[in-house]
Length: 576
Image (cartoon, rainbow, N blue to C red; front, side, top):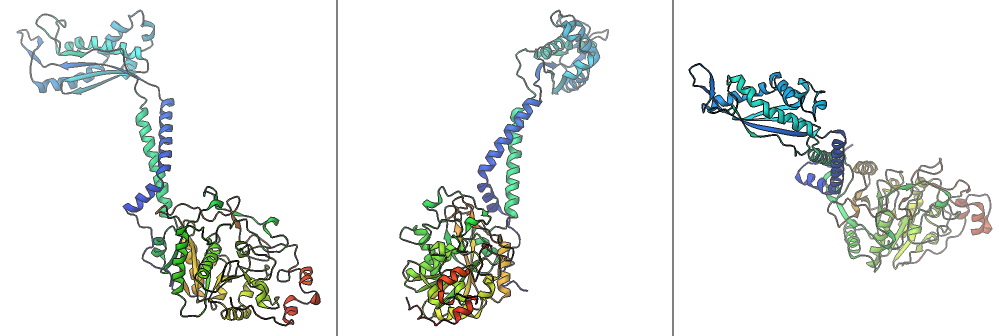
């Protein structure tokens, strides 16, 4: 089947500089924290697992060698620079030879009273492992590295003393170094020193490496999460994947009842405390105080609902009384409060408004407007329990706005909504009202919302920013499309106007513990949405005692629908 409401313009997340910068901006604090943490861990690991070493060195200048004596003895005299460089390269191997190292051990190390015992433990190979020789042009540098500062210094000092004579011997100079008219082939520039700085830990380098790895790790995780994230955050996200217009954006609404505005979303299981006494009507643990439009409502919130009202007015198809169905893909989008405030916005404009709580499984409008849940509601109207349909229509306490709560939870909500009684009730209500709103269950939870597609002017689809999954939105739209439903557009709820990225989530945690109220699908095994008490004998939500109390003259075993159908109809509620 063709997906009328989908677009193929964007099938994968576009990666560009703006996308990467947004990820960096939203993850900046985490990047710093993890980066510094990894730097500290890397530096600490290097510190505790690596033994510090000390390096002592000596530097020599290599002279060229020429032959001047008649007997062929070599003497040192200025010569070719290139030859001196080649000679220095050769000396790197000579210095690490047994000839040099053994002489250093015999003359300057083993024979020293203060260090003799220490150096007796070292052989030629041990000393050779400490030595490194580097050459830069005619400069030859000998370094000795060891964890013991004294040993590094003594070995380097011994080598500095032995190397000139040994190198002279290799090139044929027999005269002692420093003799008159002669100069060593290796002229010492720097002697070994004892005041050395420990090296070998590389703490700074390892800390920098750890910091870079930490930053890369956090950024990679944030990138992958954003790249494969199906959550809708902005209006642009909806436009990129769907063809339906966005007819309204409602900002995050924080007030005194939210505390610090950082409560976490969640769901709770059903319990006996989730019901209003023995009424059988679920009671969600949310505080709706201050959630309805009033003079104290923030300006941005009020204006957002006015803009939504204006856009809805252009979708009435010329009807005298438009019927708007408000739904969402899944629980938690905030549709019930949104539809209540939208109805109030129309009422403030002077329109006569009727709000129906069409969620017959997990209703909340009776709590939003603080109405008695035991009074007649939509389920009683559809079941034929009411003597007169007007008995279920109650004032909301707001001018021009009447409310029909859900009433008792029926065992067959989908069948009731699909009945001809709902059609006749709405047709009759259109005579007394200018606009009707129906609060419907989520599409992906149950099929209830789709069965009234022939009744509504169109569906408005509520999407919660930084919460709703576009895959579930697409599934819900496909379901409505398969029923031939008319879609009006998206309403993006809980938009954080303080952040262009809309990543903060502050809106729907109304409960005292910050949790979303009722969890759909957790209730009596015979029902698949909402829940109700198992210890109540339901007659469309009423026990025999309650039916007897309301209708003492007809308290028999007959079904409520049959008994109420035999009563005379009272006069219908006049126009508001």
